Length: 97
Picture 1 (cartoon, rainbow, N blue to C red):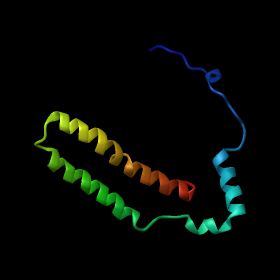
Picture 2: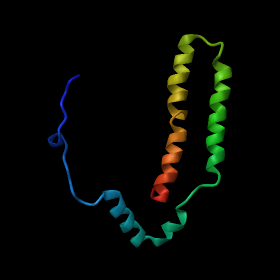
Picture 3: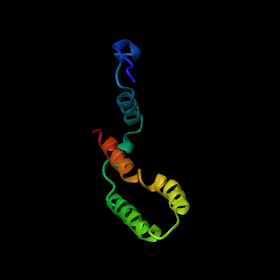
């Protein structure tokens, strides 16, 4: 609370972003990888199934005890909840967005 952040608190580098240069190196060495870029047509169904499983679990857990709800939320929710975000990130990074 009340901490001051200045430009000297960070390490500034003026080199090229490493992921772009690494991508160029890999594509130069292995041009056949280029055909693997793009959207996975089945991925929308996987994400839809994951969301439906979450909705189904809402009905399964409605009459459970609080310790069981917390256990399932920790184990199940911690794995399945970030999945839609990760799926979007994966598609965007493959497209170079």
